[in-house]
Image: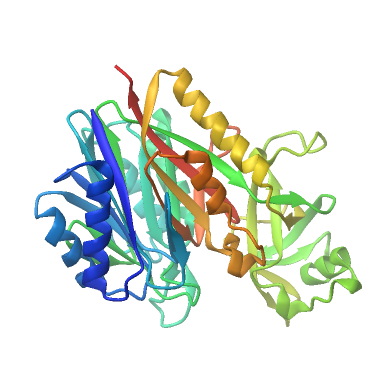
Length: 408
């Protein structure tokens, strides 16, 4: 069958951090070697030294896939914006891993998505499950821009064609909250500005659930003018002025506070007048205000003219998180399957230090999963599944992935 384990380190020496995390992962799995390792480290680490430390433990044979992250999560530890590193190892007589890479993402998001889908469709993994990471930061022009996750997803949708998506999940990665470039590992190669992916075949199945963290706090409004990622008008009025009117003069917020705080949601579930259902929503964060035009600068350009939006209030409901994970685990058990590895993608903005919460939602994920080996990261954006079955990019969510295999 399949054995997996995870290990964590917060040592500042990058070689030792990789060495320690890999050693602990093998020990947790009860393994002396493995077939595949997933690597995570914050941007404070030297990637070459980190992977050298991992290789010193695992040897040259295992496939490696990994990425920078704002922070790292395992079963018993978590942290961000420091020297965190994490490793997951997997060995199996039945499950096989295939790795994929598409370089030169900046300005080519749609094409890279098509190519990634074509590579997966043409591989032995076929319609197997998919986990992928893309660099969300684009500094190709010398200034900060965002690689567009919505264009990447659209390219993949076109590439998969009539057969449709496999079960899939993904994350937009940044090096830290200062928006440094992310880097990825593809075996022993260190990349930047790329998309890397993992498919597990041979009986493995991926199960996902999206853990939302926002609720509507306004009526529906309509985007009436937009230019790229800038919403210029809502309901035929300057967009920032409309938001100011919704939140009211007592909020204490000025335009300078809107970046990374104001969030707009789109109900993609059909019934706009029924009860709120979180699984129907995609949310988009505002990253700044175009003061001259009173426009909202959004993280993605998909809120176009005609989009129906609501101002969203960020919230955490730990009872909801626990219940959703228990529902997913019950569904896996009902299918006669055994979970062997979990991977959690958490929006970096949900971390306690950045959201103002006293508690971490990652702690609730740790408790709910129990002994199922867990590796997770803090990301810039999350990609998961809507209630309609469509794959979409999210902000301010957590996406939990669990791989399973048949019990017999």
